[in-house]
Image 1 (cartoon, rainbow, N blue to C red):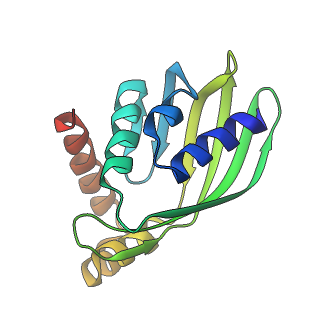
Image 2 (image 1 turned 90 degrees about the vertical axis):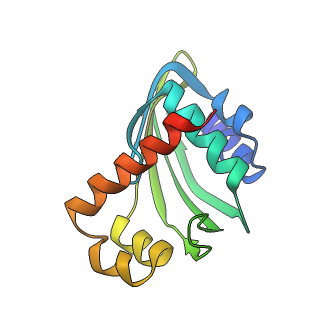
Length: 149
């Protein structure tokens, strides 16, 4: 399964959302602090949107570990946040569960407060650590996904 994780992040380095999505099980779930919990269709839209809108993007990944049931990886995307143009260097630890040779559960962990400070400037530094900010951000990101085709 290490190869599956490597394929996923190599595809992301190439901004190939369809190849990323091919690594996912049809009943999968994704979760992170910015988007919250997503089902397969929402996760597919998220990766397509992120790949299509990527600006000044690069990604490094490492520490890929996996057995037949679970896996993990460390990854660091760098990009200009589309809404503000501000440069972001996010530091993310991912955990995976597998089913039928595909990613069945994907959870990304990162410091939302740190991300918000980079992406949004002083407002993000001020509010990025609050549950209010997290809820508002997840409502906004889910709204973007609902409108994305």
